[in-house]
Structures are given as C-alpha cells and as structure tokens.
Length: 100
Image 1 (cartoon, rainbow, N blue to C red):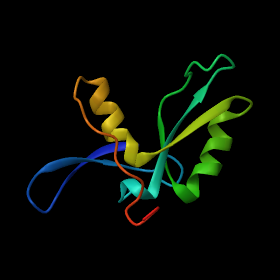
Image 2 (image 1 turned 135 degrees about the vertical axis):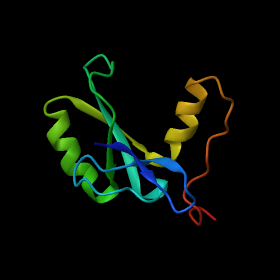
Image 3 (image 1 turned 90 degrees about the vertical axis):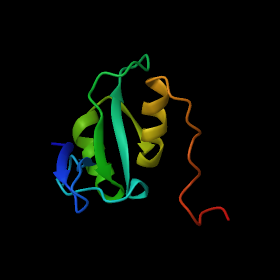
Image 4 (image 1 turned 45 degrees about the vertical axis):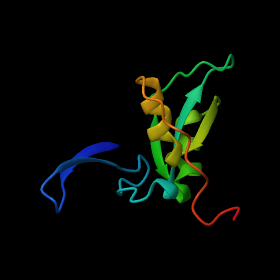
C-alpha cells in the first residue's frame, strides 16, 4: 500500500509514503519519485505510483508497458496536491545543496 498511516514518536498518526516497487518507506521527499502512465494523447490512465529513485525504472517498466509514463520528483507532490486543493503554495527548490 503506497500510503499508510503510522503512529509517530510524538503521539500523532501521520501518513507515510511507501515504494510501490520494494514496499519500503520513502523516508525523504528527495529520495523518490511519483509516476503515472499516460495514453498517446497525454491523458493519465493509471493511478499514481511511488518509488525510490533506485526503484523507479523497474516500476516504470512494469506499469507503463507500451505506454508512456511521467516521472516527477516526489518533493514537488505536496505543493502540486495542495494547490489542486485551493492552497497557494510556492514550488520547492531543488534538493538542498544542488545548484548552489
């Protein structure tokens, strides 16, 4: 299950993202991607999948088949999702330390 809820050390129940390929928790937004499959016309035709960077190619090959997949850095997801829910969030910068 790519999204699950765990009880953290502060006593809160928090959602976490698990890799759809290996099943392990993706611990940092900078360690993974989300991806989805699109039809020839560019329309999405799959659920959203999550993967560690090192698992992305294998998952993409399995899920996309003869279709095209779109792979996006996981750190962009909170902003894109929030903005689709009416929040006005700025896009995050690249991974800290990159491009500096």
